[in-house]
Image 1: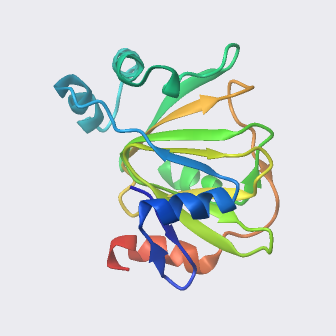
Image 2 (image 1 turned 60 degrees about the horizontal axis):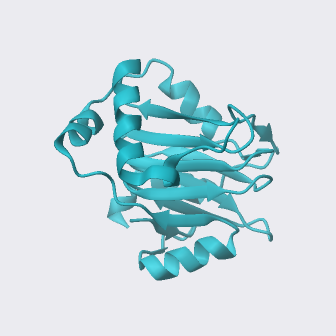
Length: 191
């Protein structure tokens, strides 16, 4: 279940409060329980998924969650899997942590692991939303945000595109909050 961190290291974990805070930031956050069948669990436990395994996982998600994980007609979806042995991981970490916007909504359904979404508030301050398995998050088009992986980079997520087949980042030049990045480096479980 999602948690929301502030730069001073404090966090909110109560689901109703986190959902209300997410809404106040313009985010859509909900929890969609993952399929519980053994085959899905086995696929999610693998660090990497080949194209056939990705297709199988999508079929299991479709059968279990239906329209909740479908992209609109003419758009697309894909699966991403990050792991410690991914050759381009250092470059991706740097790229994701740059504050940016998109012209399309950024929608992620976290399947395994933990992802962190830094969100810039209207006053320029930032908060960090921790999303884990079963968390479905939509960052609206135009919202300033950044993304990070924690010390354990293992993450699988379904990405849904509403208008395009991919996202193009428009970097704003704003820096991710160093205190929030520090929380990630220290490991959020210690806070």
